[in-house]
Image 1 (spheres, rainbow, N blue to C red):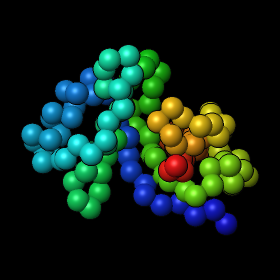
Image 2: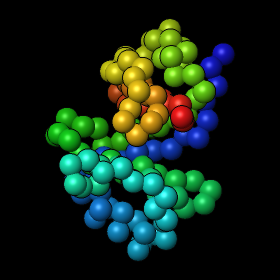
Image 3: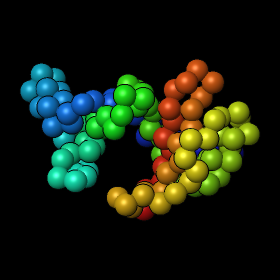
Image 4: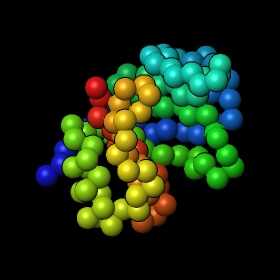
Length: 119
């Protein structure tokens, strides 16, 4: 069976830098990772021990406000597991420019699930 770990929510926001400032100054989160795209922050990960959250730039009005990110050792096996469980595949397993392999599904309630493996 496919094992999953390191689950964390991702909030979709209009301005990642503004959201990072808010969560850092208001709650004491520490920014541990960010990914830039076209000169602006597209994604940031913030940690508040023992957990963290992701902040992703909204690309369109259709983007969900919330998604769940999970890590696994084998994205292709995880995708097959999610297909068999009835997940709606939105993005098949693919290598990303930041070095992770990921796939994206939607569960029966419409929650977006991103599953990735670290390089």
